[in-house]
Length: 395
Image 1: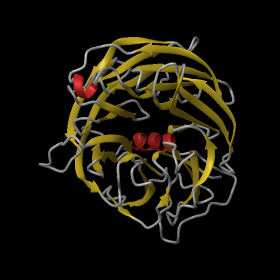
Image 2 (image 1 turned 30 degrees about the vertical axis):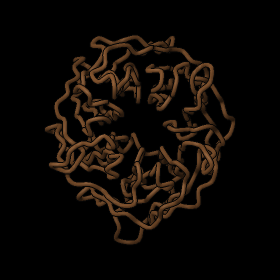
Image 3 (image 1 turned 90 degrees about the vertical axis):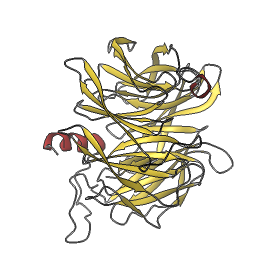
């Protein structure tokens, strides 16, 4: 793959640590450029709270062996279903799906990279019902929240230290749905800023659109871009989007029809084109009502794309050709997986952690760098209703 793309992806997922003697894998083992100096990562888990969970949990992952420490409660908060870590690694954000008078909760904490401890919680509200996703721009000056229940998007301004400051923008989604029974109405599911920090892309599962907004960086408000959206296939139910750091391409998973899509992006020319759609199921296997996709991830080396299949209980793996902008199925990752709502890949590209929402565990899988597939290890840990996984290099 082009060196530029590989470098950008590595920078996007790695939190660099320096000033210490690196802890390296055994002799003869290649050391990734973004291998953590301490040889360890902090891993944070978002959960649905109940009898087996009280909020955000934290583990330590040994980057050499793949072993996880026993989970510890990092922050007690209601159903922090999605997490995000600031680019500098010093702030953790979460959305809480527990409802209040002014939408669900949106939270920030100071994060100590050395200890993994969270402190100084700031709590705001999303205005829209059921916030389910949060991310920040590259400069960490703004955060975007997708409100699933309310079918809306909310913008927040951040303080210089990364903490939440104020709600500055709100847009209620509107439009017709293809399948009223399954899609119901507008349902924002995911929002990301592009590399320029001027555009915000928000997936709406109900409208079958990737909505595009202009961000006014002076006021923090968002307004519809022209074009206002990228049309996705009817009843595909676009759930999550991941944009390559160079802005050349984005990947979207269709929750309802079990698909993954490639979108060619030319921000300078203001052109966005859906160029490929593939099934996330094995060839010949049909979609059944119990199936739905959940998460989409790009491997740090840019050569593989993954989508989690709930109900089918697998992770679909695809190789990616950046020259042709095409995906090719390479197989499915299997194991003791029950409803893989979320998964993530360590910044060095070696470990995949799969959150089994209905299995009450997080499984550890070792990725084969050549094939992109992964084998299950015995390093799983018990976590009540885990639904989000985030990594941070331990200095």
